[in-house]
Image (cartoon, rainbow, N blue to C red; front, side):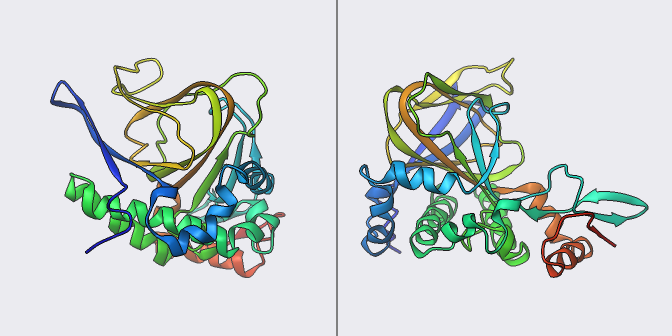
Amino acid sequence: MYSPISRSLICIFFRENNHDEMNETFATINLFEINNHLSLRIYEPYWNICSYIQTFNNVRRSGTYMNKSQRGIPMYLFGSTIGATRYPLYYKDGKYHNLPRPYADYRPGSSARRFTDTLWFTTFVQEIERCVIYFLRHKYPNKRKAKITLFEISQAKHVIPEACRISGTFFNHMTFLGNLDTKGNDSIDLHKDTEDIITALFHVGKPIEGGSTMYYSGDSKTDPGKLMNTIHFEHGRIQIGYFNDVLHAADSWKGLRGGINFNLKKNILRFFQNDELSQYYTKYENHGFIDKNYIAI
């Protein structure tokens, strides 16, 4: 069946010496080249070369700020987390545990939700979701791995509450990367997104130089292996793949470069797949997402 994505999506195969030491496939596609005119005319005015700076900065300011320590650049977080916190908690088997929750700045009624629940932003994120699903169904060569991921995507939309996902999609996490300013040189360190199931990375900007995404065959920053591929920066480009399996980085750049990372987190999905555990979240949601001293029992 014809898809407006099919003509534009390009697969990139990473192989080391034609052996299996590093054998992975990513996809890249430019959002503005997808032949889906009905969707494009809804979100394109917000991300075109004249508007993207204002759009990016307006949305990212509504997110939860994280400092530069992890990736080397500021990050602004949306969606849900199960990270360390004093509250909310749930009590089970004689122990206290972190409860999954929307970020404080992403709760229903927040300024962040007023952005992500708009028609244009929802259409934009759903277009990226369609690209991911098309890649897994039709292009990813490891059919067994793709089938498992597609099942997890289906599960995510079924079991993860809407308040913990982005714009009705299976993505439960979104990160705005950077401030889109021109102060000094920026880069993103070598890393794997170990908690992600599948990832889509969307870029906007116009760097004067640099800003490419680089993929390596190694396992860590101290053992990076070989440079397997370099994807040069392009405004509107989406990169899709298993960023949890492949070491990657962004080389230093000058000028304007911003990224938006969409992903599904393993720990959030595993929690909500467990009916016994998900009841604790339901109690928290029914309590109105009030964190102070909250413990679900």
